[in-house]
Image 1 (cartoon, helix red, strand yellow):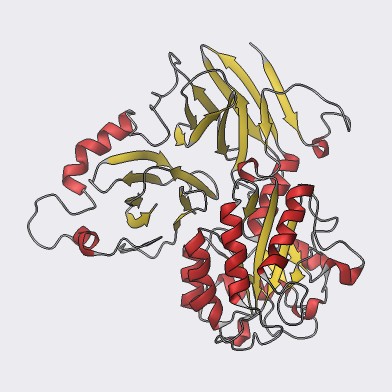
Image 2 (tube, rainbow, N blue to C red):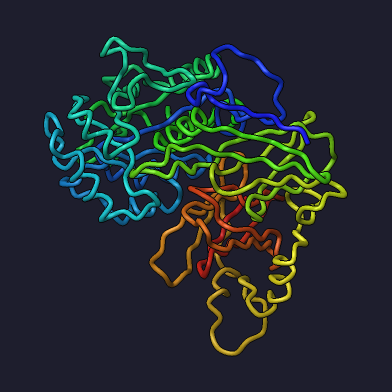
Amino acid sequence: MKKAIIAAASVGMFAAGYAIAQDVEIATWSGFRKGAASFTFDDGAPSHVTDAGPMFKKYGYKATFNVVVNWNPNWSGFQGLADEGHEIASHSNTHGNNMSGEEASSKQAIAGKINQKYGVITVAYPNCNVPNESAVLQNYIVGRICNGSWKGMNDEMGKDGPSNWAQVPATMTGAEGQLKSTNDFTGRMQKVIQSNGWAAFLTHGFQGKQNGNANYSPTDINAIDGALKWAQQNDKDIWVAPMGHVAMYLKERKASKAEASTSGGNITVKLTHNIKDNISNYDYPLSLRVKYSGSSANVTQAGAKLESKIDGGYVYFDAVPNAGDIVIAGEGGSGPSPESSSSSVSESSSSKTAKSSSSRSNPWGRSSSSGTNPWEQFISSSSGTDAIEDIAFTNQHFSVYRSSDNYIVVGGAQGMPITVYNHMGQVVRVTRGLGFEQKVYTGAKGAYIVRVGNRTFKVSL
């Protein structure tokens, strides 16, 4: 048996600068990208729902929306954004000069209106004034200021994040800000790609849109659209994700260790950390790669199928810390039956069971039955880009969406069975929810149905 361990310096397993050949590696940023960027929007403007949401959906990216409780934001609209994978965060109750005393109450008020896995884990300070840092860090994993340069700091962060999680910088955009054009945004993203760092942007309302109280420093929405288009074209290098999501990934990566062992033709990876607190379990998926000489692999965690790819002598996948052993089974391995590719139909026993029952519960509505079949809505519905149509009959909220790298992603479904069907009604993936969110399938262009528990969604790749 051979073993290899990788750990962040904060775990204290290796001295700083110590180098060792590794069989398993945790990526600095999700997808082994070179840098990260977060788009944040303050004040809960109507245009954030009507204009920003569809724009981000077009490119498969997600943002952070910081709402002011007493400004009566469109709660149902922001819940819709949360259901699509965006982060809804706090910007205080009253937007006073300093939000001291509102750290916990604004978090609780928003959590009472918006259903998302951990409630509210990010706060942005009104007028950029830092409140009680202790209260911030008791309630949030991120406290966002404005430009770092206004406080003698850098405007961008390095690969290890900010020196103080209660003062995370974000660069102001728009008429009064430093970033006005697409080139301004892409220039910052290029900078963090080169430095392996993280940039965050702070936007209020948009020029010529319905902004409500978000009337400071309006930004040309076309500048952000162009920035997102550029990011999608360079998606292999830049990770665009909500501020709270990037923070979870970064904190987990710095605290996690991964241990790989081989036995019986399989590789088993244990991915763990011990930073769970009363705010988050820190179960955002980390991107890993493991030295691998096979031509095919079936990767599972605690028995749940993980999407994977083989490239350059490595197998790549995303896994959740503390969610169970990760098993990589190749040809002749004794693990779960391998698939011919990451987008082929699983032949595991659970998949076969799902297939055998598909004639009874085909979500495309092509089975014969008496009475009205609710799934028939999908046959006549539009399958436009990124169309997601929730026709469920429960109040439980999941996020189901297409990512920028063309995966179907499911969030908030820990422990729930997940089944993906193609347009023919055939089962193409059976897995189970792990952690904060996960990639569950990638395949050919077209419409797919995703069943999470007893809820059903349509997603177009």
